[in-house]
Image 1 (cartoon, protein in one colour):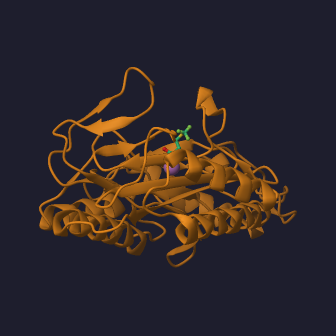
Image 2 (image 1 turned 180 degrees about the vertical axis):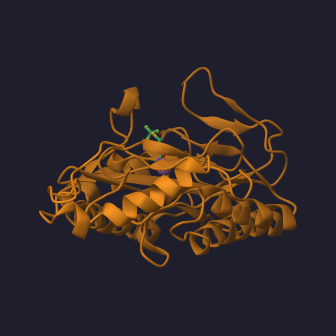
Image 3 (image 1 turned 45 degrees about the vertical axis):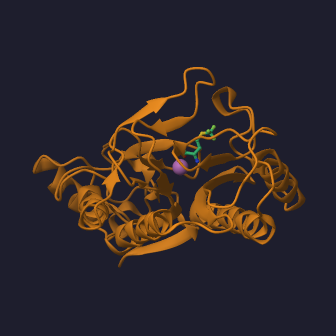
Length: 290
Ligand code: MF3
Ligand code: CO
């Protein structure tokens, strides 16, 4: 961390003197760093103006997913979901963040059954009764990014898959409840992982969440299998996703090397995921997108 004079303006842009603004906050972070913990860099801590921007972006993301929820049905192709997402996002003044991101060809990810994530919408994929599908929406609005996803059950879904969808949602909720400033991302992930294990499910190890807000994918990487007391210190102003991928079978996955994007479960069993964007606050967190 760069040293700042106590009477100089604070690094956060508030215009206040450092000693009256983030000095004590920085001291607290320093204390954890000296104990050997990973701590956030200043660029990961959003100021009130940035938080307001991400919050607005989140409102667009929520509205787009609400629109998907109203319209998704049996017999629809995932390509149609892509069109719903792109048109609704643009109607609300946003840009779908996935479109063109590192060459990604569509506006949304639609991951069906044993697809873990990054399913690419297609005219060839028709939603049928018994399917479970994750729709992962990300928005750029006035330059700010938000990211969230929900699961949808199509027609008559069997007991096992329904339970998986419920457990995955509960895992995300356990994670949200464990976001507290001056504790660790590992405390949050341990809460997520424990709930999956208690229900006989597994958490994907090699994929995780991420910081978000000023860019689509920012540091830190967010694991959902890390032990308590490990990973980065959470401090007010950090914004990241909680998006554990929960498998009914084993945690092993593989990448589709034909499209270069889609991840599947190795054992072919179903996978489910719910995602929120959260901001760490003084006493917990604020959900910015769901
Ligand atoms: N929301 C997804 C994630 O954070 C988006 C992946 S990048 C995309 O993992 F290009 F596939 F959209
Ligand atoms: Co994400």
